[in-house]
Length: 168
Image 1 (cartoon, rainbow, N blue to C red):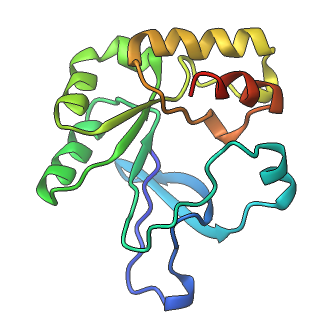
Image 2: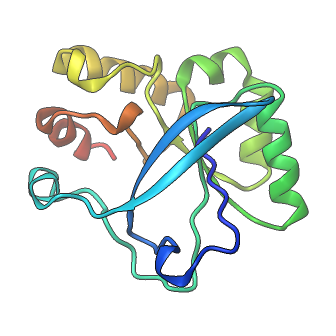
């Protein structure tokens, strides 16, 4: 899951909606700690993927997203924290985890959170053929049933993005 915590940050270091975020994960006790850096997406990346959402003009909003679940132990804790603070989030889930933990996936949906497709097996898009990648995404969507998609590792080829833009 991608989780970033920021407290007492100077105003110029606060993340804004639409900022391109690089997160580096490292083990931290029972969970995961992420170092978050504020970056702007390079123009060439925005040019290669013009149909992708790069910015959302909502100065009041904060969008919470969690990847790679559902994961026993972690997902329950996240759901409890979201409920405690009356917050909603989007969970980009893996098909193989939905298949392994259907009750946990159902808890996410029943709590009113959005779910998105994060592929079935969390493969890197750059290392797969177009056909195999699309099959992996479609297989996951047979379980997830969502129009939202986020590629694992934020890696996807232009051909894969074009093919998926017809579905998501």
